[in-house]
Amino acid sequence: MKTLIKFSLLAIIAVALSSCASSQVNKTCDELETLMDSQEGQLKAAEWQAYAGCVDEDLASLQGELDQLNQQKADLEKQKRDLEKRLQGIRGEKEAFAENNVLVEERNRNLNKGLEDLINEYKALPTEYTVQDGDALADISARDDIYADKTKWKRIYHENRDKIRSPNLIYPNWVLKIPRDWPDKITVRRGDSLWKIAGYWWVFDQPTDWVMLYAKNKDTLRAKNNPDLIYPDEELVIPRGEDARNAMKAKSKDDLRSYWQSK
Image (cartoon, rainbow, N blue to C red):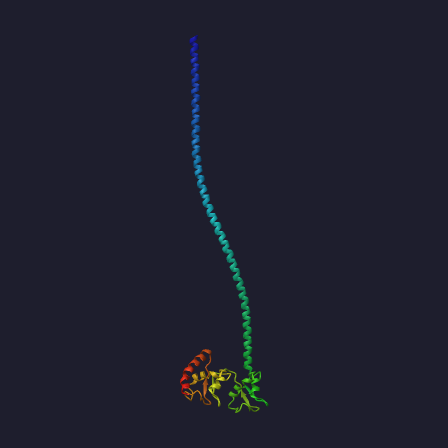
């Protein structure tokens, strides 16, 4: 009886020990699986973290490019505004120029019309005058259709010396020539001198400019090297233009130096 009880106890202890060993093995396997799962998770987490870092870098780079594009856009918009402002100014200048051009064209038309009217009036002025009773050369010169200036009678007298012997004596029905041009030549009349001719208003209106007449005509004058002597019917060339006058004046002084020294 005692022996049977002993074996029964041993069997119970063996079963108990077997049950405890199986339980411990299962526990160990569960812990190993948990540990493996934990390491794999850590590896995956590290991979995801590295990928997230790359994504952040790409996002930062793209954001920088976006900022540059926005800045370029702002610069282009500013350039566009500046160009539109300049274009508006140019259009304004163009409109002003067009308006001014219209005014200039109108002014030119008016000037041309005025010039044409003056030319027609000039052409309509008489080139001859028939002396009336009581006329004097000064009265004729003072007429609006002659010279409108009584002091200019000398030109009428000079132009008609073949007919008028004395400026104080003219006769009715005489037809007198009325010159209208600014001549580049003049014919010497009795009583003329270079000084007197230079003083005529239609020549230089300045007697002291006689030296220019002499310098221009000294090679053709009958009296060589003597500006005090000129003869009727000699034809003198009248130098025109400021430059020509200045040049003639300077040349005349040189040409006349020897003459004055011989006086």
